Amino acid sequence: MAGPQTITITLYVDTQNITLANTDQYCNFGQDVTKISNCDYTVEAEPGDLIVWQAIPKPATTDTVKILAIWGRTNRPDRRRSDYVMGEFIRNQDGDRSVAARVVGKQRQIQSYKLFFMVSKNGVPSGIYFIDPKIAIKPSAR
Image 1 (cartoon, rainbow, N blue to C red):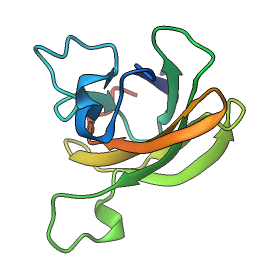
Image 2 (spheres, rainbow, N blue to C red):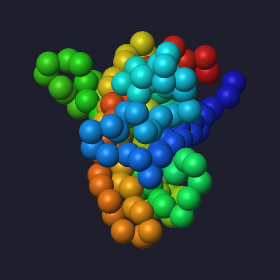
Image 3 (cartoon, rainbow, N blue to C red):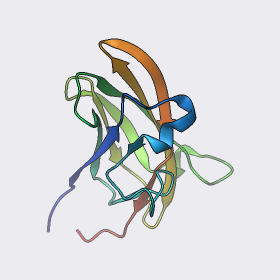
Image 4 (cartoon, rainbow, N blue to C red):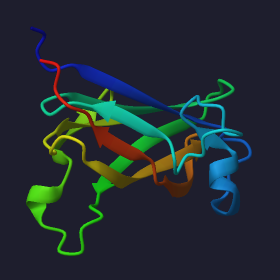
């Protein structure tokens, strides 16, 4: 029986063209955005898995993209902490360009979250952006 897995999610950002008005048009997770929007992009994980979010500029440039924070939220109106999918965040991964969190949610739970990231062009921060993907907790096969 396998233990918890590490799941890496890579955000690709067109640092030369992204603006606050067109964020979804110029960043994605590698999915076909004509079929799956960033808002509908869903990663499946099991309780105990570690999810690591990282970001890279695409096409490759000297610009940088840094994941700043992941804000989980629940669809339940009472928003109790026990309903959250993600536990405590582990920062300073990969030279402070990524963020990680342990999955603590209940099986068959789906949660949207906000992924905040900063783009720096030529070493100068040019903006902070966010997108709203999802995490789905699948039944444990372990």
